[in-house]
Structures are given as structure tokens and as C-alpha cells.
Length: 541
Image 1 (cartoon, one colour):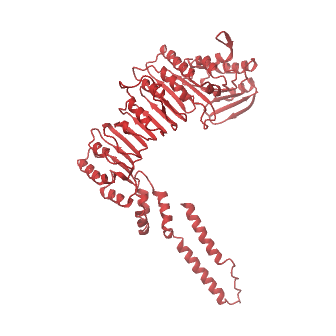
Image 2 (cartoon, one colour):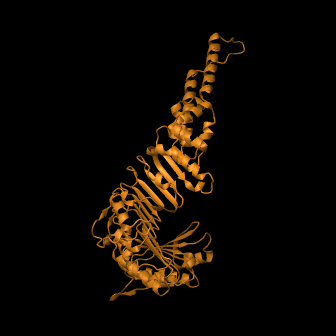
Image 3 (cartoon, one colour):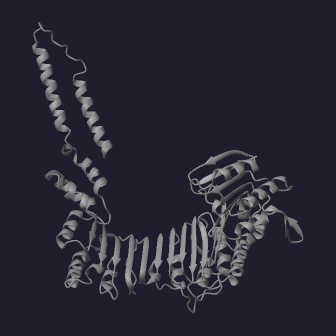
């Protein structure tokens, strides 16, 4: 809008300047003013006065003002304050705003009935963004009366609704009539209940593209053609969910949160039948669902364009065996070829006392359970990791070149190096971070990388192509730096293994003192030292 104003002013000034491109000669002290000079000056003054008058923004064409108002005041979910500030400037602006239907498309149940009627009148036949929130009236003595008034006003406009945000309360009386309306132009439905609300009749919404339900029970198998599906704490069964997916081949975004997808008697145990092809699915997020149901679901879905994939399983008690889930998640996490946006092919493996995380790019699986102990935890996490790695595409394993490890101090993460070495032969960069600084992780890690280890019937150097190390400086204690220097020197002189060429230490600004810097400089022949706010980078000979 500012650029538009500048352009209009520039054109006006150009028009005025063109009138008097040739300046009038200044009359001398003895030269009388001619009538021609006086006429020219008067005409220039008049032109300049007209120019100043036309600069008033209220004189802009109505079409231009409508664009300006739309940029400044358009709000699809009902913030009309900026619009009313503009509307109060003058009568002309008020008339233009009131006669521009696109500025009046959001209506909320909280608005005063007269304002709601004004919005419907000014919006004419435009589609509407409707917010119906029953929670506002639960403690209002006249709440039922207000709900009925809003219902009476809005029912006749249902075929104009484009998006609906619906917030029902427990045992809502409005669910019956609200979700039975003819939503012939509804594109998005967002239901967020305080408690589980139930509506068993099919929804009359043939154009629905986005469905988001929290604490709701709907006729799931009546939905089709969805682009986005978001379910949280719903009662959808696995069969219900599969029916929706089969009827929505254009699905792009899928999210499940605390929706168990319980199995029914007729759920197929043979996952090879009824494959579900979702060629446009790009986002798949799951948080706390049934591992068995998810396994059956993942074995049936084919999503070749998946860019974001995340499964998080958290168990407070009675954890499930997730071995099969890790096995079936592997092809989704290690999708081949990698998405074009992922410039660095990186695998991430983090373990904590009660957690394991495996990730490649923007795709990951996490399992957390407090039932893991120091005895059964490492054993089960290793089983999950092994199952995951065995089912990764070999082409993915040949492409990955960056390994990120995270541990919690017991040395467990270092024990994974052998299997990771065998599965990812092209690793040239290792990044390591520790949750606890004074643990055994660095000891085990350096021990495995400083000498050859027994693998199968022979000995091998782990990660022979490793040339870059990124470490958390906080993990070094006592002899920690000595271990690091020995690792660098040993691999530099060893045969059949690449030398470490770059070492990075992550630390707070000033975290690496000058004496340590000098020791590193002398010990490993630093060529350059790059210091940033949080990272010290050493390039080696």
C-alpha cells in the first residue's frame, strides 16, 4: 500500500513539473512584469493547488481503496478492530468498507447479535468463516437463549460456510443440529470438544478438504476426498481410519495424537491385501497410538513422496513390543531417493535412560518408557535398532555420510558403532552430544575409534572414511582431551583409514580457555582456528 501511495504522488509531481519545465526568467529591478509572465505564474499556482488537493488519499479510486483495506484489515477469523479504525476515518471510507463483501466474512458466536446481523448483511453472498464456541456460555444464565438466537440466525446461511471452528462442551445440545446442517461449500471443519462428543450421522459436506477433530466421535467412514486429516483423542478404529484413507487418495497431511486405532474383529491380519496408495502424502505424524495397529497401517500404506514422518510412542506403563513397528518404519524414514531439500544425508541415533530416537532427515521414530532399566533397556534398544537397520534400503545406507550420536553417559551409544559401521560404509563425519557430561560415553567412543576392533573373523577400523569430528566440549574431563588427541594422532598414522581433517568443539563463547587452545595448536598442528559464538572449528593438516 505504501508503494502505491508513492507511485501516485510521483505521477502527480511529474504532471505538475511538466507544466513548467522552462523556468520563467526572473524580472530585473527595472524590468516590468509582462502579462504573459503573470498568467504563467497564476496558472502554475493553480496547478500546484489542484495537485495538493488530489494528493488526499480519500480521493483515490474506490477499487484502490478496497485493495488497501483488504491488505490492512482482512482477517479470516474475526479481528475487526483494524477494519473499524479505518471505517471511522470518514463517511466515504465507511461506505466503501460496508459495500466491500470480502471484508465481512468472519462471524463468531461471541459477537453481539446486531453485529452478527451486520456481518451477514455486508458479506452478501460471500462464503463465511464461522466460529461457534459453546464454552463462553456455560456459566451464563442466558446461555441457552443466546445459543438458540445464534442458531436461528446462522442456520439459513449454512451453505455459505467455508470454514467452521466448533467448540462444543460435554453433552453438547448443539452437536445434533450443528453437524446436520447442509455444508455444501465447507472446506475445513475443526471440532475441538471439552469432552467426547458423538454425532453418528454422515456429514453433508461434499467439498470438505480438511478435517480436524479433538475429543470427537463422528461417522468416520462417511468422509472422502480429504487433503488434511488431524485426529486427537478420538474413537476411530483401524477399520474406520483405513476407510478414510482409501477414500482420500489426494491426502497431503496426516496427524494422529492419542488416537489408539483399536482393532476390531474383522480387521485383516494379512497386511498384504488392500494396499493404500497415497501418492501425495507428504506429512505423517503419530503421537501415542497402538504399536500393533500402526504396524498394520504402515504395512498397507504406500507413500512415495513422504517428506516428514514422525512416530512417538510414550508408555507410562504396560509398554508394547515395538520391534515390528521399527521394522516397518524403516522404509518411511530411509526413503529413497532423498527429498531434494535435504542437502546433507544424515542419520541420527540418540539413546537416553528411557528413550531411543532414530532419524534420517525430517523422518524419525521415538519410543519412551520408564519401564526400561539398566538391564533390559540397552537390550531392547539394541533390538529395535537392529530391526530398523536391517530393513533400511541398501541405497540409503550407501548415501548417508553423516552420523549424529547422542548418549546419556553410560557408554551404551559407543557400543552401537560396530553395527553402524557395517550398515553405513560412507560415513565421513561424526557428531556426538552427551546428555550427561561426566559419563563413559566419550571413553567408549574414543576407545572404539582409536584402534581396530574385532568384527566377525577379523579386525577392522570403525568408520574408516571419517574425516570430521564435532564434539560437545562439555564432555571432556580430566584425561578427555588426551583421549581426543590420541584418537587424532593414531588415525593420522594408521593405514587403511582416513585422517581426521577437521575438529569442531561446541562450547559457549569463551568456553575453551587459551591454554587448551594452545595445547590443541601444538599437539595437532592446527592450520586455522575459526571461533564463533558457540563453536570452535579446527582444520588440521
